[in-house]
Image 1 (spheres, rainbow, N blue to C red):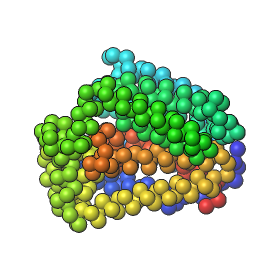
Image 2: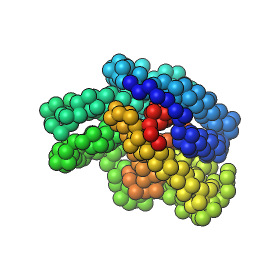
Image 3: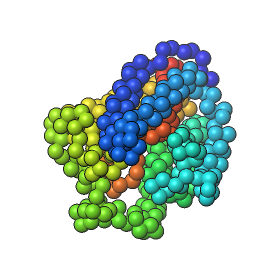
Image 4: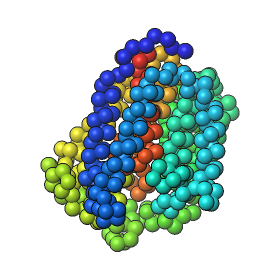
Length: 366
């Protein structure tokens, strides 16, 4: 267990808090009209996001001072608890249904999303398993099969909700960790072929997913149905131009773009702050990725490196998928934009993950 501690990565703290601040402002701006109409309170979503942001910041600084090896000791228990939560959420009357998916537990105002907890738990467990069994990573029987069995068990439970977006992020993050740990390329090609077939099967098995694919190919074919959301997103991004309409001046948030404070908040950012504002947000994410990679490369042990890769990989994958969706480069998947989109579980867990990354930075040779 690493003993020598230094100051945490101040640059990473500044970038994270900058993204969080922009997120709070944009959640209010994007949701004010809808919140006023539905709840008679323009600050309804902003107040809740602020509460979770405060909880998340406190948790981030608390976790920042916990030796990251502590999570290694609790990885099995954390993973077991998350599997239990994923099963509980599927029980009728226990799991809360939102957007057609039974993905939530607890009271509506402060409900949690077990799939978000599973991402972190699986990253911690895989970092431990792969660091302890590095010599077997290149083998299928002792390396890939045990790792992927857990990954796809979690993926299967998440798909029963169903939540393809969270499941995709979880699998992509874990595969990234396996690749960095040294898994062979030929194994990835084989698994990729199987995964592609499975992905096609998942799409075919659910009519609404087929609609998402067809609306992605030609959203104007069903402009008032399956293609409505992406069309409205493009109507927000395109007219924003270089400087945007100005903060708070979005047109699409007037009930054209459904719930713009969640998955499509980047559309409102582009509309109000323009190309420059959107580029600035993407630059902050690039800086976050850069610091995460530096921490991973400078970590004092393999466990810390893989843990850093998992955390920064999870954030980067969510950002790429979300931006691709809102710009029409991918079918709609329901992935939030880290630190910016409205959502308590996602925001809090992302800040906790950054807290772990900050602790690793205290032992890294930056």
